[in-house]
Length: 360
Image (tube, one colour):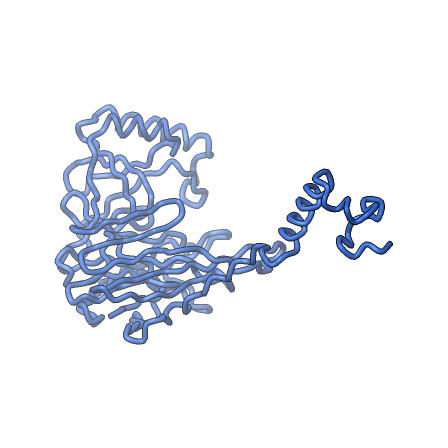
């Protein structure tokens, strides 16, 4: 007899048709049919739809949003920016590498020495027009620069100094040296590493013996900690902690009075392990989600790449775009060092891959 009712069951389970409806046979058969339906039937779960990638910045999904690149003169590249408290002006720090075949005037001319770079401070209005600028030349190439308002002064942390700037002219009023426990061979030529580290520890502990003259400063634009030694002009100094161990940092924070470095008024900033956001009265920007950018060969290994989706809201108007770290691009955008997003005219300012953009 041919099994035409349950073709997937062996014939020995079908001695006759009446046995099919016996409970001892019927219940296991129904369970098998249910399992078959779940595995191969129409109710099998479908693959999730692939997330839609938004246009790559500076392109956006909103035709009404205008994104304009604001280039710096003489091919300077944007390092950082600072929107002033009155939101009328924008201070921009730009850098320029030495040109090939034209060594920098401050070159050390020693084997293994790192080249210098020129930096320029530029003040712009809300339209991106240059108001004035100041050049700072001969800074080691490996240092960036971040702005902050501390101790009543606009400061620029760059290289081995904090540069105190006039808030209206950007003229350098003072250079506060940064003392660091890091051993730099081309700077410390008379000490070994062990000698330098022991000498720094002794001097650092001597500074802490006068705690009333010391303030604890967390310079969050650069994620850096300092002991700020208050003194008359040209005698002040910033001392880096001996280490960034949590126990050491907690001890210094408890012993010393804090020196505040706050966000701009009305700004809320969130920097979690997964997403970053800035919110102010009329504008906000936030990272929405990460998408896979596949893998890409970066000799000698394959590296995972990502796509980051952003949402910008200005006066209730949404604009969405994405960035990626494929092909050596930058995945993250950068904003004003005081957390400010927009200027008085409502324009939003963003740095992407060392280029300054005005969005309105």
